[in-house]
Length: 169
Length: 148
Image: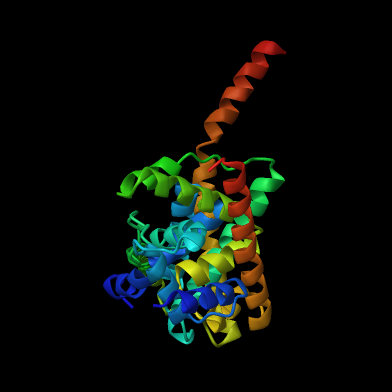
């Protein structure tokens, strides 16, 4: 596989890897580093890629594991990932201020979810993966994925309603 | 889509039972301008989920072509070439002066004679060399006569 073929192979899903990394690591910088790391790893192993039925799922699993490892090592060294790029994203979106506010609220709520639920929300509700694919990537069974997803969605709704009732949107 | 259907879908959504197509329908409904007032609270969720998909990975990944590997192999090949070259050269050099005829004799009698002859020659040469030390003896004798 040459460089061009590899680039063509990863182009459809590299944004998904990045968004998933960002979902876990929160900081854009960190997520970019992680995505780059995963892609370079893929490139180094590109002679065995044809053995995988779905390179995308494989890459997603790699990204998930890599980010979880990152988080673990960050926690071990008592370092919190610092991030301040909410405005960065919002600036690119041409929407009403009100919308942006409630969106970033949703984003924050998702950030507060446990990692597993965050990943599942990311893959199902944002990237629109089938349950079977998610189960494979998460190394869980489909029922467990459904349960976690439902829990996460309900949690988001609950938090949102709570915030709205307090009027701290 | 009718409101009634949307309500059912929302319930299914939170139970984690919707299909991808149904979720797409929900996202579409909530991104439209006429959302029923009692469903307004979910607008933020679907709005966020929709826009979260827009973010892109913009960094270019430095894919190092495997040129570096070639360079490594070239250096290995070069060093092997140099090594084998010097070895060959040295072999050639050490082989040149070696004469196959070592002057061996099969008959012991003859070998004895030849050896004697060779030794005779060596001793003659040695004696010749020793002759020149006579001067030193002479010198010693003269010094002895002085220091006695």
